[in-house]
Amino acid sequence: METKPPLPPFTLETATKKVQMAEDAWNTKDPEKVALAYTIDSQWRNRAEIFSGREEIKAFLTRKWAKELDYHLKKELWCFSDDRIAVRFEYEWRDDSEQWYRACGNEMWEFDQYGLMKRRFASINDIPIQESERKFR
Image (cartoon, rainbow, N blue to C red; front, side, top):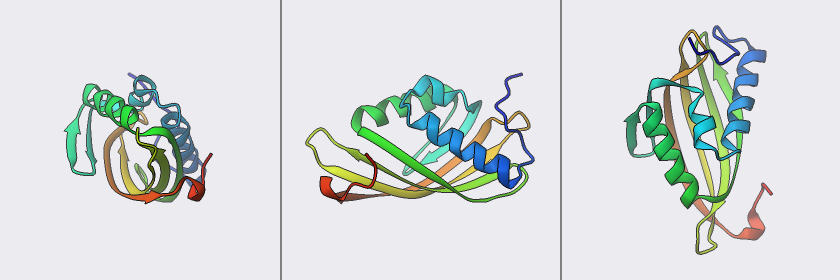
């Protein structure tokens, strides 16, 4: 069976590490790598999109990073329990017309016993910004 340590039940240290690992993986913008952190049948809600499974996750991330250019993400642990973690995040990106955005939101994660994420629910708002307003470079 695949495992993705740290495994639940989470402590402050292991939950913080799990969040940092997710931030690092997403900043690679590699759908194949990112998808390995999720169960084969992982359930997602991302904005108005609802889907499940690694193949759908890879397809979603491929579309996302083709549109969201110069993507850079920061995640912060909000709270945790035995097998769940909540994070707040911000990321910046630009579209192909050079308009920059800052996306802000929250995610709720639930993990299986092997440390793979089986549910991810994200609420996200995009705010147009000027390039001079960027926080992340």
